[in-house]
Image (cartoon, rainbow, N blue to C red; front, side, top):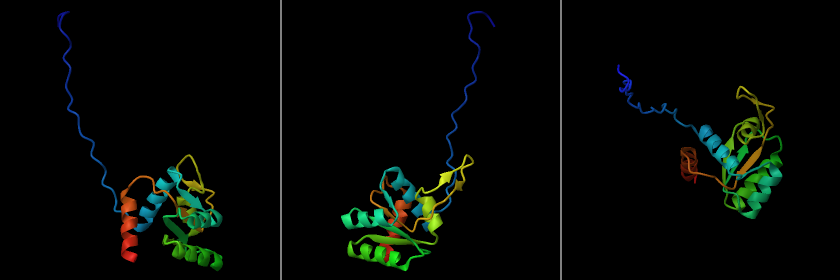
Length: 145
């Protein structure tokens, strides 16, 4: 090589990133995705007092109620408020699971949820952005009606 010539540079073609195939969403995964987006957009009310207030104000768009609630009056109240104010209602199996989805837990450095607090009811007032989980939840609610 002489002093005036540049060293040859090997051209590398840009390889397009291949998206990993997503596993199909089930209803629980869709509800979890919707809850996370609502929490990020400050549109999530957790607990009886916040949830009842949001439903009565007419701000509630979707209510998620756990099946293993230990107070039957609690479930009756939320179901009646949802029926009175035309708020859609979805049930999940465990209150600890709903609490984790609603952000009532600590996340350790390895990404595992610790100190999960149970949540018997959560109301979404703002869904945030459109996601495939939201579309699935809305389709499920239409099929229920």
